[in-house]
Length: 349
Image 1 (cartoon, rainbow, N blue to C red):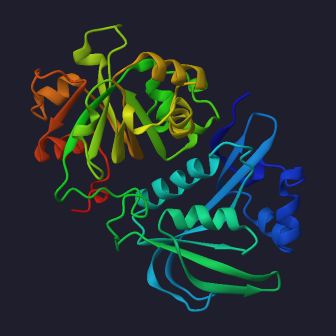
Image 2: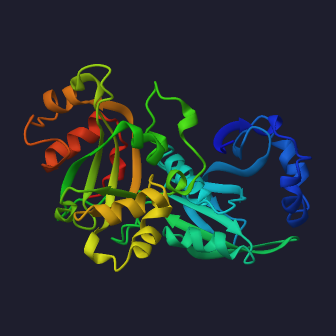
């Protein structure tokens, strides 16, 4: 059975679950704190029977004074408790995406998390996405690092600035994905009429990073370019009503088949972030003389799916050239994001 990240209440989760044993050991006040939060929201990861993750988020306004040095008087999202048992998947990235999505929706200025130095993998994950050590927090449980990510200052780096999108000097593209692959690759962009069971707990679903493979000349795209993902029609009605723009990504890099020395290299690069199995990837490499691979960050799902008809009528996207892969004007790109009700804050220039 697949694992899902879902919202629940503290009161609906059993503190006796073995999942919490390490948290009870590391924080003597944890049981008391957990009970006091009975009516509050938290995210859990489970398969319907077994708990394998939890995430508690809390907005804090004003200076944060229980760390040294203090955090300034701004709006913060605190990652109050985070524990993930990943078992080979990149579920940590999926949870971190939820942290960023929440921070953007709450319009905070930054995010912070306290973590013991022993949790080196977790620290590495946060630092990959722009968190830096800012302070320390000392309690009876020991000394924790305080990692902070600003949401108002930017480095210009695609991953460290995630989920923000830089547009100065960059291009924007419309890129088609067939329905059978779309929601397995982009789980937050699932359509209302699709069964949630198609989202499985595997690496390509959980990751912030996505691999798109095609025979189109994707090398026209450059790192930092923005990509509107366009889910093609399922054939149940005219494409004008069934084909929809669902999400926005940013290109990290594009490779051609000749950039991979062997099939093993191709599989190693693609498999963690692709919807294709190893067998399918090997078949592609063996039989397709023309292959292009785009690695992208998954920055935001649209809050309103935007139909092909709306893209034509409201964003001015012409019927030709074909919509499998085409360049958008800066105005079309911004209009499509507005139609999709994507938070305007995500585009920073």
